[in-house]
Image (cartoon, rainbow, N blue to C red; front, side):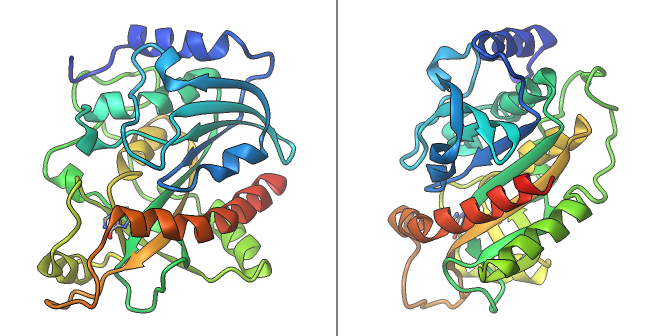
Amino acid sequence: MKEFVTMETIEEAAAAVRRPLTDLPQVGIILGSGLGGVAEAVEAAAVIPYTEIPHFPQVTVEGHAGRLVIGRLEGQTVMVMQGRAHYYEGYSMARLTLPIRVMQVLGVETLIVTNAAGGLNPGFSPADVMIIRDHINLIGMAGQSPLRGPNLDRFGPRFPDMTRAYDPALRALALQVAREAGIPVHEGVYVCLAGPNFETPADVRFLRMIGADAVGMSTVPEVIVARHGGMRVLGISGISNVLTGEDEPAAETTHEEVLEAGRLLAPRLETIVRGVLRRL
Ligand code: HPA
């Protein structure tokens, strides 16, 4: 499989998604590990399994349904990704972020991206929500960029700026919605690692030192592609577990723990996403 995606690949995938639609989506939503429940709230006009979309990255991890749900939610036409693929599943960065390009071709201008993340900030507790203020692209600094290869000029420039990658107005709106609903919420910096292993205690101490508040294995590649194409982005992390950085922590991190916290976090994220959509 090639590392880069071409305009033809994107168009073929977009055509398969467009076919059953009468209304094109304005807002894209990506639901992370254990957070797929928001899709059930959509008045669905079309449900398309990823297996039916040519070139789409397939999901292999438990907690990700692997389908697109397109329809109405809080007055907006939304395209919801119920589950996402991750770099550790073996896709190139460009393939992994193909769904964002498809959204852009269909006319989506706003992206709401969610994830499950480990809390690094000592002030965070499990099931808290973090609105992403900024990210650290550690995986990108190590040489993995979804924009590597020929630039797709139709979407954006060769050297896209990454200041204010997370839209300040959307962040303020999300914080306001969460606070009004009594949801424990923070704003902070998300750092993306490749995974699939969780972090060592020394990793945790390092990530804190460089200014990260939460750590996960997704989101940053998608946001880079979204920003390259000029989308407005809102990023929301559900803090599924907290990392202490102690050499002998009381508990180890497990995927089950991440999914368990998702059961508490999913309704919180749904409240925030719905509130933001209502006031867009
Ligand atoms: N580390 C990395 N990714 C994660 C974690 C974590 O502790 N929790 C959920 N996703």
